[in-house]
Image (cartoon, rainbow, N blue to C red):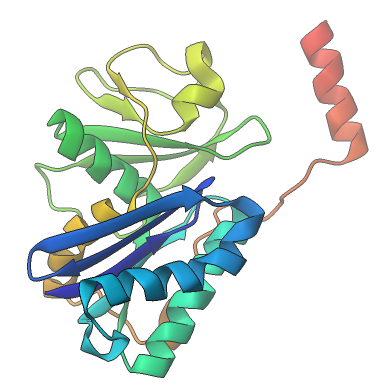
Length: 227
């Protein structure tokens, strides 16, 4: 199977190209530079793998939730490449990619994935690898870290651990981000289940519609913290 995977939903740009079981990966700082560096990095990695875009079985990308700019960038680049090469797309929830990354490194089968959503909130999704994962969105939600509940025996994983620390439930933990290699591992099952879509149907997942607090909201937050 030949795949290109990309994720720019966090502060790390993550790419992977899979060719018949062999995987080449690339990571770099993301953020504001992602839109300028993503396409050249993809072309370089594809050349290293000796593949053309038209040879791919699918292009897999992290559809969100995550950084609004990063999610839009990944979706737009994946759509453009898919249209140009006539290749289907696999949009994958970034929380699922976090859960897969944690499963691969820790062996955990029940993972509660949490990504830093900024504005004092986390994106949250629960993944049980011993049950059928019927929803690509994985029941994603937006919640304050204090209100998150962790079931006994479940692993808490994601980059929200670094941001919110003790405000999140105590228990087993694994700090990680969504990666392109995790997307590559999820892709065969998704392709087999018919989850591939044409580029025009591959859409980002935001969860939050509002991206900034008002002045009054920021003042209220500051007052509550000092009280």
